[in-house]
Length: 407
Image (tube, rainbow, N blue to C red; front, side):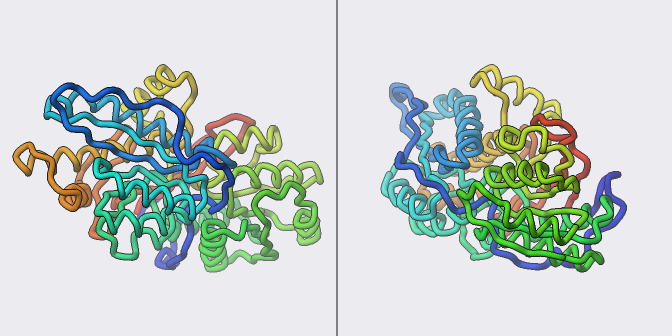
């Protein structure tokens, strides 16, 4: 593992800790099951239809990121349609709203499995949704490529259809802790988590690494998703007088906590994980977001020429700026389509069974995406995944990158 110039210390051996964390929480409460955005067109004459589903929260508190993932995947699919039509196939996107709810995700997964034309899934955002849903994909031999799931369990179950292009939380938590202790000089840390698989898993990994690095955890409290008044936990922070506050959770609650804490005079740095990597954090916290640090599995889309082109094309197509995970939806779709193309060519131009497509996706090596380089190991983890560290110096998104950690 190597660190760039923003770090002076290698991550410790605590990276081997296994945690059941997720890229975001398991909550959500909308009733729609699929996106109403028209993304399909009539199939070209004489071609066979191949559908690729997306599963992400298109409603509820995580909808900003869920929609970004879907749009990124949609953009890449539409860019590749002409090539596949020359091969005799029409690609269609089938977006599903999992509402950040495991039950809804599983329900959608069964619908996806029952559709004989769906060969792959790009998703999910929430690992707590991805884990049970992927059991269904495995049953139907449908390849899943995740743009965001960070829970260790996602790829540790030995499922042949499950893959992800981002890093794991046993990598992310310690990266944040090392930066907090060695770069920010944190010695007394107050930790808050949102009682979800993601929040508790990330917080526990952070704590283990922070204590290993010599910091003292002076408080550990849980909050509930959907809460609006955090004065109770903020008063505890005031009493403990930490020099850094870590939050394991999502931007919706994180933004409120930061704003209410600043209003009470708490000016120490806040830190969180990739669940806070959203423009929604700035929308909620406003000016209070300054001096907030986040770790993220998502890199800066403008860091490469291909990434810059992606940003320009995304803005032109959707008339909005991309979120941190937009390009990961795009690159996840690219990885899946690479495997799909390989499987078709290996079968003399004919569409093989879904199991063969899943095998071809797992076999993807040296894929060069708009931002990510992807090579899957035997578990479906990307050996090239990185963790990025950012700081909000202004009340604007995206934040400034201050560090990068490679495996």
